[in-house]
Amino acid sequence: MLDKIVEAIRKKNTRWDGLVQLKELTETSETDRFIYYCDDSFWLIRWAIIEKIGDLKLTNCLDKLFEKLSDPDSHVRKNTKKAILKCIKHDIQPIIQRVSSTNYHISIFCKTFLSKHIDSHFKEIQEAIFYQPWIIANQLLHIFFLEKKEKSEKLLMKATKIKNTQKHAIMMLAIINSEKGIAYFIMLYNQGSLKRHIINAIQVMDPTIIYPKLIEYLEYPSTRKNVQSMMIKCGKPCVPYIIQSIHKAPFTEELLYCLKKMTITVPVYTLLEKKVSNYPSLAKKINLNNLKPK
Image (cartoon, rainbow, N blue to C red; front, top):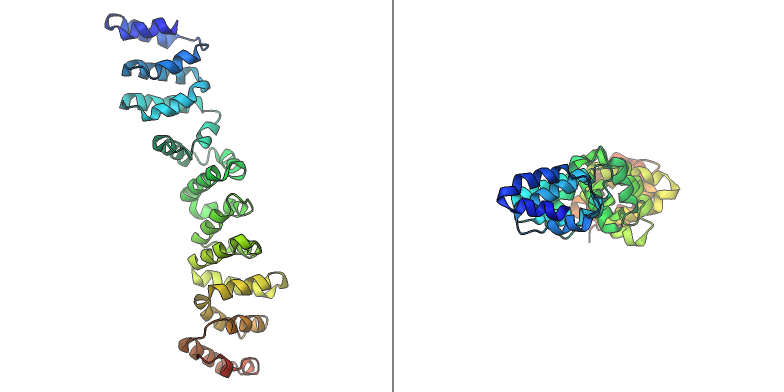
C-alpha cells in the first residue's frame, strides 16, 4: 500500500492524490518501507514520509529520524524535528541516549530540547544523571547547570556522591560558590583520587567565602585533619584568613600548625607581627622568630 502511495506522489499528475492518501493512511505495519523512503531521492517524498512517521508515532523509526536531522533539504530537516518530538512526547529516553552523539546535528537537537524542557522533565533527567554512563550523565549535568546555575545546588550535591559525576559536580559547586558544598568537599577529600580536584575547586571559589568557612570546620575533630591538609595545599591565598582568625581560641593551635607548613613572606610576617601585638595572649603560643622569612 505504501509503495503505491509513494509512486503516486512521485508522478506530477497524481501527486496531490498521493499526498491525500498518505495523510489518511493508518496502517503501521510497513515500518521498513517507511524507513526506506526516508532516503528517497525526491525531497517531497522524504518530507511527506517523515511527517507521516511522526503522525503515526512510529518509534521504531527513530534511529532514521535522528539521522535525517542532517538531511540536505531544510524542509525535510524541519519536518524531521517535528516528527521526533511527536514520537518522544511520552518518553524522552531517545533524547537522553543521544545527548552525547558524535553527530553534531543530533547532539545539538537533543541538548536544545533538554534545555528548553528541563523543568517538565526534571525527574527523568535527574534519574539519568544518577544511572546513565558517565559521558551521558555529565552531559546532562552540564545542561542542568547551565540552565539553573545556583538553583542546581541541591542536585549537584547529590551528584558528588556518584562516581561518574562527582568531579564535574564538585567544580560546578565551586563555580557557584556553594557554602553547603564545602562540607561535601571536606568529606570527599578522603578519596585520594579527588584531592587535587578539590584543591582546584577551592581555588576557583571566592576566597572570602571558602577560607572562613573552612576555618569554621576546624572546630570539629572529625573534619580537622582534612581541613588542615586542604588549607596547607591551598597555600598563599588562605594565609590572610588564617592570620585573621588565629587569635580565636578554638582555632589557634590548628591554624598555627597550618601556618608553620607554609611559606612566610615579608608582608605575611608583618601581618602576623601586628596580630600578635594586638593580642598579647598569642605571644605565648607564637614564636615569631621561628616564623621569620628566610
